[in-house]
Image (cartoon, rainbow, N blue to C red):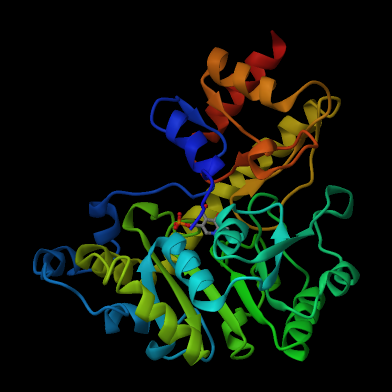
Length: 368
Ligand SMILES: Cc1ncc(COP(=O)(O)O)c(C=O)c1O
């Protein structure tokens, strides 16, 4: 196994816990255990009784039943709970691929979606989203990327880092393409339910056929990254069983307290979504104002979903710019070079409550 450093994680390791304003986080504002338990009468008392033995490897039946409510056709036996979405990505790639398989991966994107496939021996073709097209993907390009040994398409919508939400027509076309060509479709849906207009929410991949695997997590839309609870949902028994088998070599089972807390969170997810999408929308109006005041310095493609956007610095070098900003003003932005983007983009996070203060600092820095 040959895994290069995860650039984004190494970057956060350097700054996350010593920088005053994180203006590039991908997750929404978190909350305390007490605040989460207060969402449901009796939950705090029940939490005291959680048994600290090993848990069921595939995830507790109660948690899996709650997770099923995100989907139309899933049953608890279709859900495999993991330690974060990251473990699920890792196990999926090793379960699904062998050396010399070819996979097509939405790009730019979360590094492990391409890197773990590469480490598993696959040849990876990026399927590029472009700013000039509003970060959409071109279906003709997908057809051209297809090879005889193509095994899977990996998409992420709502998208990290651009906040792009695929149109329903394109989404259905990608599914049709995967199905017709007998490909697996790994659908990273960790930002699902954060659409600014709920009417634009796409069907979950797993509900559309057994070639699709949906990825979910409590970290992003629901703002509970510290639980480290993620899952896959799929009717694909072969992939499910292989992943479940590999999990015996990674974490065996999930943390019992986290599973209980995740169950409470998922049962009350409407309240979490309302709170967090509310924060994002307030922050978006702050960012709209910022980018209209600084239109000569930045390009701004407004996201349609999720807690991130990927604007572009029009003059200068983005790495140097981000470095000066964090050193002089204590505001962290994430340079696009960490996504192998060479066009001066940077990532901003929209899910944190202190964004208005961070932007104020950012603006003072720009005035200097
Ligand atoms: C698109 C995407 N998939 C998966 C993950 C992994 O989620 P987690 O860190 O909660 O395991 C992330 C985290 O940033 C992500 O952005």
